[in-house]
Length: 157
Image (cartoon, rainbow, N blue to C red):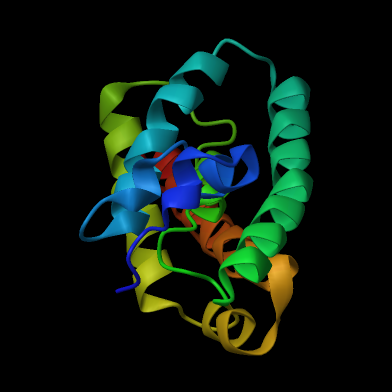
């Protein structure tokens, strides 16, 4: 694991990339980053679908830049503490999912499973696509898989 640099607390772009500091956790920073995304999801649950998706799209596009910039500044591609991509992946997972604490927890678990196991094309994107786009892309794919799982679960219940 790569230790979190002090710049996380001094540079706003690094602070964002490190998930408002959640990526500085001494172990499992991706898990802590995903946990930190849940309160923001809760705040967005009163939005209708289109504003919610607009926020996720903007967060994704901004994420490409902040993850790329932070990665370049640190000289490490996809430093383990860069967790903005987990925020976006979780928000994708939860798109159009009616809020409940059970659904929020289930979405957390499902997203983390896909993010950790990395079935195709997640692993391909993680290994082959460089820069901020690559950092974001594998979690977008994991979010899409998790979103599909969540909606299948909702449909079956």
